Image 1: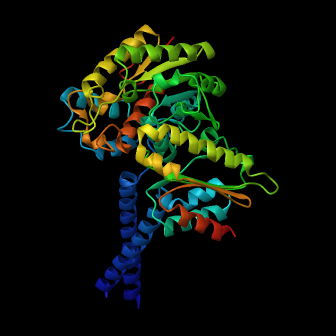
Image 2 (image 1 turned 60 degrees about the horizontal axis):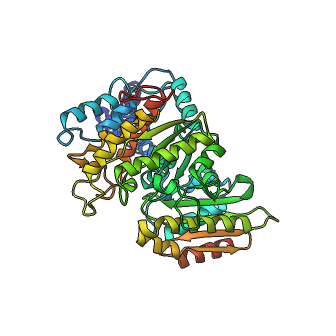
Length: 173
Length: 304
């Protein structure tokens, strides 16, 4: 009887430890794009575009991505919080890869022109920087898509541009 | 009945003991192998050496010459790898909130690294002015459609204008490999001098720091007559002189990642050429944060 209880106690302990281990693992998830849905949600303050991004990561082939900070988005793209009702900005963690997925939902009644212009400026900047420096990535940036669907403006650099734009369009429709 | 009650009590006690021991084990495992913020703050103000676990992840033996290895261990171990206190962390945040980094692809990579890894927010408000292939040569050219200048607030800008707009109190300039091709070292330093002058004209009180050039991975297939470790070493020496002659600070990060003889160590390269990986950027961060606290052992010149 005593042995049985000891064995039972050990089994229960191992089970509890496994639960603890699992939850700790989730807590320590980093900022990589593949596991960044919560980070994207926090940044965006809205679930929808982070869900769209999550779907893109699941259905297309992306390199390791990271979610850009609000500070960087403002500093580099010149886009401030009041210009975006919702957003997702992800880019390749490897600085030598141009892969980027940026989706912005402008506030109701706002013009999308400023965001489109910001994306166009960044695309041109990348092309100038990469033309002689990294010709392979330059060609990928050349094919970058800047597309507007109603209130949503997208900037996509990937080998799966069309698939990604289809996911975005079907998700926000 | 009484006997079985005793067994139950003993069983529960044993269970609690096992849970306690296992719980401690898990806590220890995660504090060591998890990926905590770079050097997390000890809220009690005394160091608990998370830096040590960071060190344990890499081998420090066999590749670096002894002198370099000792210096690396010195900067990462004692006395500088104590956890930062709240006050120190606040001082680092303030220092880098008033700081701008100007640089090339290496700085682009560091920018990404910081967005992902700077969980204490030491660099959250640092101004980043960088572009692929950027150099002092590019920086002093007038802005044109096809010229390389950094984007700041969505606009292509001269470095000196962006620094003025950002009201930066200090600037860390990280130019190296792109300085050499097409220009000799003297010319590269003349270009840098022009840039520094322009920066000071627009922001008279700004402190200028030059960050040491890095080395190439020794077996890189992309070595050229210009871009090689001998020239990078010469550039390093000349940049130290430049700082002395131009009242600029010199921040040494490169010697911890290799030298002119062994090149950029394999464990720090991300592309077996000139770019570096997260481990290397961890070291940069440690050097920069210590520098903000005046702890860097290699401070040679501090701007007045």
